[in-house]
Image (cartoon, rainbow, N blue to C red; front, side):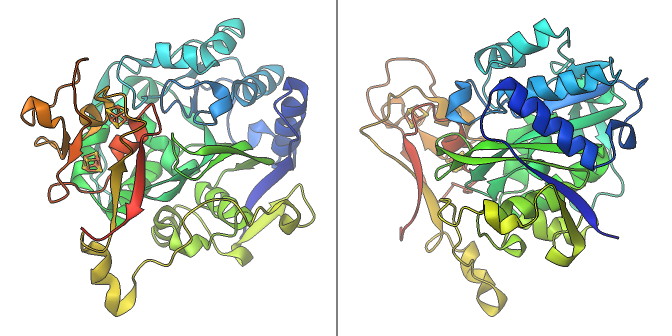
Length: 383
Ligand code: SF4
Ligand code: SF4
């Protein structure tokens, strides 16, 4: 059996254009009732990574969010809530407000789920992680509709369907997970366990304007003009890869997603709906890391910090806000203000740009994700 992925061309964020694209994609997949029941309480899980203007392509665009809600409501699905656990400290409501989603949700009477509290959930079948701290709003729902964003990511190269469910993990536990699963492989395997636990019913990817380059928060918006929809997050992400000429087997969340039974990524295992030829929508110039990682007998090289990649601060852009210091998940911070004696200061008034201790740094790139000024880039450089 093949996994179905609807690839729906969508020229822009005009609400009726997006509404029709979502409606068409869902129809091609057999309708909402194939995935959820009207009496169920459904959590809509957008990407609310941080407080960014929707046009920056950091977060799910309000038009996509609105189109999903209105499509569901028009089909009689009324028990909708929404939420995410953003990387930015200070709560989901404020983040949703700045990202333009709160206005939509309030107007369409979709309440915010409880993402302030959480509960530990055992997952004995997990291969890498056997328990997760899951937000209460996720546990209170009957099912999840994942509304993710098409973006690059420094640790996993891309973030799409599989990675977006990480926002169901509560607050600071996300940082702890980065510390516990410090490399792309183990982190991806943890994400796959999380996906297998949560079993989102449907994954809708906002690829109208995607993010390329220094994603997931500091890259550049690029028109891809598609919305992807699938019940299989691995097939969804693999299709994103093919649209940008990236080999899906080199993406840990995709490759291990196939091995662990979350979904399918091989071309012959995926049925594309909505377009005659996926190649017509390709963007081979999409700025994403396509370099081959060390493999086979040279795999050990990728573990060596001396030849690997590392975050670097561009002094001219840094406003010394301390968000990177705060985001670092290590107890003994690997990025810190030198004029504060290594203290994890996040108050105003730091005179110097933060510095890295690359011997401690685990290359999780949480600092790069949270920098509001695009001042952190990732470079491959000898120490
Ligand atoms: S988060 Fe960015 S702008 Fe803020 S201190 Fe760190 S590097 Fe500088
Ligand atoms: S300094 Fe940045 S990349 Fe290194 S461990 Fe801390 S957050 Fe991760």
